[in-house]
Image (cartoon, rainbow, N blue to C red; front, side):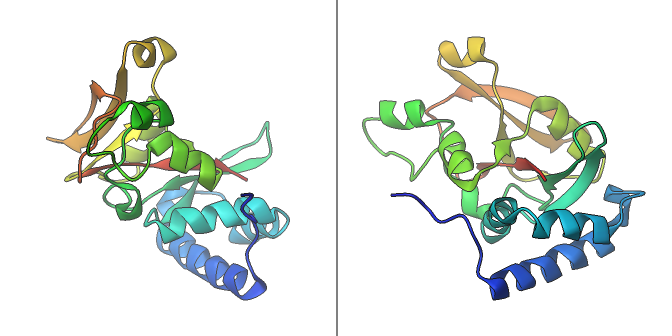
Length: 187
Protein backbone atom coordinates (compact mmCIF):
# COMPACT_ATOMS: atom_id res chain seq x y z
CA UNK A 1 0.00 0.00 0.00
CA UNK A 2 1.44 3.35 -1.08
CA UNK A 3 1.07 6.12 1.47
CA UNK A 4 0.02 9.49 0.10
CA UNK A 5 2.81 11.77 1.25
CA UNK A 6 0.86 15.01 1.16
CA UNK A 7 -0.89 17.12 3.77
CA UNK A 8 -4.28 18.72 3.43
CA UNK A 9 -4.08 22.54 3.15
CA UNK A 10 -5.31 23.03 6.72
CA UNK A 11 -2.77 20.49 8.04
CA UNK A 12 0.00 22.26 6.14
CA UNK A 13 -1.06 25.64 7.54
CA UNK A 14 -1.16 24.29 11.11
CA UNK A 15 2.24 22.60 10.79
CA UNK A 16 3.83 25.75 9.39
CA UNK A 17 2.49 27.71 12.40
CA UNK A 18 3.99 25.17 14.81
CA UNK A 19 7.34 25.14 12.99
CA UNK A 20 7.51 28.94 12.84
CA UNK A 21 6.75 29.27 16.56
CA UNK A 22 9.51 26.77 17.36
CA UNK A 23 11.88 28.52 14.92
CA UNK A 24 11.23 31.88 16.58
CA UNK A 25 11.56 30.48 20.12
CA UNK A 26 14.91 28.73 19.43
CA UNK A 27 16.81 31.24 17.30
CA UNK A 28 20.20 30.09 18.65
CA UNK A 29 19.75 26.84 16.67
CA UNK A 30 19.73 28.64 13.30
CA UNK A 31 21.59 31.94 13.34
CA UNK A 32 21.47 33.92 10.08
CA UNK A 33 18.54 31.88 8.69
CA UNK A 34 15.27 33.65 7.90
CA UNK A 35 11.95 31.92 8.42
CA UNK A 36 10.56 33.31 5.15
CA UNK A 37 13.29 31.44 3.24
CA UNK A 38 12.52 28.21 5.12
CA UNK A 39 8.77 28.55 4.58
CA UNK A 40 9.22 29.18 0.85
CA UNK A 41 11.26 25.97 0.55
CA UNK A 42 8.75 23.99 2.60
CA UNK A 43 5.76 25.18 0.58
CA UNK A 44 7.52 24.06 -2.60
CA UNK A 45 8.24 20.55 -1.20
CA UNK A 46 4.99 18.87 -0.13
CA UNK A 47 6.63 15.46 0.50
CA UNK A 48 9.22 17.06 2.80
CA UNK A 49 6.45 18.89 4.62
CA UNK A 50 4.67 15.55 5.05
CA UNK A 51 7.88 14.07 6.52
CA UNK A 52 8.18 17.00 8.94
CA UNK A 53 4.60 16.36 9.99
CA UNK A 54 5.51 12.73 10.70
CA UNK A 55 8.46 13.94 12.80
CA UNK A 56 6.11 16.29 14.65
CA UNK A 57 3.26 13.84 15.28
CA UNK A 58 5.64 11.22 16.70
CA UNK A 59 7.00 13.74 19.19
CA UNK A 60 10.22 14.84 17.50
CA UNK A 61 9.69 18.61 17.63
CA UNK A 62 11.67 19.20 14.40
CA UNK A 63 13.55 22.46 13.99
CA UNK A 64 16.02 24.00 11.57
CA UNK A 65 19.58 23.42 12.76
CA UNK A 66 21.55 24.50 9.70
CA UNK A 67 21.78 25.34 6.04
CA UNK A 68 23.94 23.53 3.47
CA UNK A 69 24.95 26.23 0.99
CA UNK A 70 26.40 23.80 -1.56
CA UNK A 71 23.17 21.78 -1.75
CA UNK A 72 20.87 24.77 -1.07
CA UNK A 73 19.07 22.79 1.65
CA UNK A 74 17.84 23.57 5.15
CA UNK A 75 18.64 20.87 7.71
CA UNK A 76 16.06 19.79 10.30
CA UNK A 77 16.73 17.58 13.33
CA UNK A 78 14.39 16.25 15.99
CA UNK A 79 14.89 18.67 18.88
CA UNK A 80 12.62 17.15 21.53
CA UNK A 81 14.27 17.09 24.94
CA UNK A 82 14.05 13.29 25.08
CA UNK A 83 13.99 10.71 22.30
CA UNK A 84 10.62 11.13 20.50
CA UNK A 85 7.94 9.30 22.50
CA UNK A 86 6.14 8.00 19.41
CA UNK A 87 9.32 6.28 18.21
CA UNK A 88 10.45 4.37 21.30
CA UNK A 89 10.48 0.64 22.05
CA UNK A 90 11.75 -0.22 18.59
CA UNK A 91 14.68 -2.40 17.56
CA UNK A 92 17.28 -1.13 15.09
CA UNK A 93 16.22 -2.35 11.62
CA UNK A 94 13.78 -4.66 9.78
CA UNK A 95 16.30 -7.54 9.79
CA UNK A 96 16.56 -7.31 13.59
CA UNK A 97 12.78 -7.17 13.87
CA UNK A 98 12.44 -10.28 11.70
CA UNK A 99 15.08 -12.16 13.71
CA UNK A 100 13.12 -11.84 16.97
CA UNK A 101 11.07 -14.95 17.55
CA UNK A 102 9.29 -13.75 20.70
CA UNK A 103 8.30 -10.41 22.20
CA UNK A 104 8.76 -8.51 18.96
CA UNK A 105 8.68 -4.72 19.17
CA UNK A 106 6.07 -2.89 17.12
CA UNK A 107 8.61 -1.68 14.54
CA UNK A 108 12.25 -0.82 13.87
CA UNK A 109 14.00 2.54 13.82
CA UNK A 110 15.24 2.13 10.24
CA UNK A 111 11.84 0.86 9.07
CA UNK A 112 9.96 3.74 10.69
CA UNK A 113 12.44 6.31 9.37
CA UNK A 114 12.03 4.98 5.83
CA UNK A 115 8.23 5.17 6.10
CA UNK A 116 8.55 8.75 7.39
CA UNK A 117 10.96 9.80 4.61
CA UNK A 118 13.73 10.72 7.08
CA UNK A 119 17.11 9.35 8.18
CA UNK A 120 18.51 8.46 11.57
CA UNK A 121 21.10 10.90 12.87
CA UNK A 122 24.73 9.96 12.35
CA UNK A 123 27.14 10.06 15.27
CA UNK A 124 28.50 13.43 14.14
CA UNK A 125 24.98 14.85 13.71
CA UNK A 126 24.07 13.62 17.19
CA UNK A 127 27.13 15.39 18.62
CA UNK A 128 26.17 18.58 16.69
CA UNK A 129 22.67 18.39 18.16
CA UNK A 130 24.08 18.21 21.69
CA UNK A 131 25.88 21.53 21.11
CA UNK A 132 22.42 23.13 20.80
CA UNK A 133 21.18 21.90 24.20
CA UNK A 134 21.06 18.88 26.46
CA UNK A 135 19.08 16.12 24.78
CA UNK A 136 18.47 12.49 25.85
CA UNK A 137 19.31 13.00 29.52
CA UNK A 138 16.82 10.24 30.45
CA UNK A 139 16.41 8.39 27.14
CA UNK A 140 18.69 7.16 24.36
CA UNK A 141 18.48 7.20 20.57
CA UNK A 142 19.52 4.72 17.90
CA UNK A 143 21.96 6.31 15.42
CA UNK A 144 23.24 5.25 12.02
CA UNK A 145 25.54 2.25 12.38
CA UNK A 146 28.55 1.31 10.23
CA UNK A 147 27.89 -1.73 8.02
CA UNK A 148 30.74 -3.71 9.58
CA UNK A 149 29.17 -3.41 13.05
CA UNK A 150 25.68 -4.20 11.77
CA UNK A 151 26.98 -7.23 9.86
CA UNK A 152 28.14 -8.66 13.21
CA UNK A 153 24.69 -8.17 14.75
CA UNK A 154 25.29 -4.89 16.56
CA UNK A 155 23.91 -1.37 16.34
CA UNK A 156 24.84 1.97 17.89
CA UNK A 157 22.88 4.29 20.14
CA UNK A 158 23.71 7.48 21.98
CA UNK A 159 22.67 9.56 24.96
CA UNK A 160 23.81 12.48 27.11
CA UNK A 161 24.95 11.75 30.67
CA UNK A 162 27.37 13.47 33.04
CA UNK A 163 27.62 16.44 30.65
CA UNK A 164 28.98 14.18 27.90
CA UNK A 165 27.74 12.41 24.78
CA UNK A 166 28.13 8.65 25.05
CA UNK A 167 28.01 6.27 22.08
CA UNK A 168 27.20 2.66 22.94
CA UNK A 169 26.49 -0.63 21.20
CA UNK A 170 23.76 -3.19 21.64
CA UNK A 171 22.35 -6.11 19.72
CA UNK A 172 20.30 -4.69 16.85
CA UNK A 173 17.30 -6.77 17.91
CA UNK A 174 17.16 -5.21 21.39
CA UNK A 175 14.58 -2.61 22.32
CA UNK A 176 13.82 -0.61 25.42
CA UNK A 177 11.03 1.70 26.54
CA UNK A 178 13.50 4.57 26.89
CA UNK A 179 15.22 4.10 23.50
CA UNK A 180 13.90 5.57 20.29
CA UNK A 181 15.53 7.41 17.41
CA UNK A 182 16.12 10.95 16.28
CA UNK A 183 15.96 11.87 12.64
CA UNK A 184 17.20 14.42 10.16
CA UNK A 185 15.60 15.85 7.04
CA UNK A 186 16.99 18.08 4.32
CA UNK A 187 14.68 20.48 2.52
